[in-house]
Length: 82
Ligand code: SF4
Image (tube, rainbow, N blue to C red; front, side):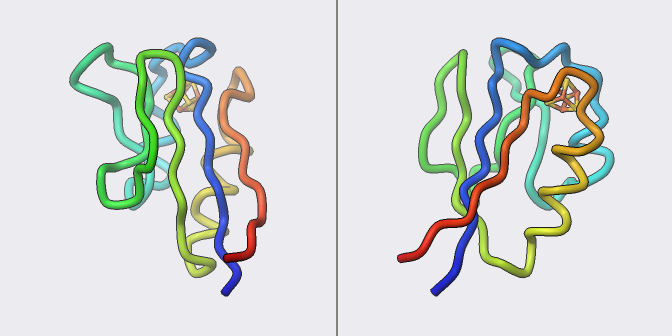
């Protein structure tokens, strides 16, 4: 099944809030340091510096819109097979 891996470089994130505004299904500002992260539902790794999530293909456009809107290019979305 095709899924997508979403990576947020929290070290780059300036907490502008655009990603959570554009795609709240996937992104939120963390209560730990205020940086963007993948919501718990899809999260597979979370540190102060990085957040990784695996999302279903239905949410690809949402994730991509968040990535494309990020002013510091902190979000990447890549296709994976499992
Ligand atoms: S759009 Fe980029 S800088 Fe803004 S909150 Fe999201 S990841 Fe952080």
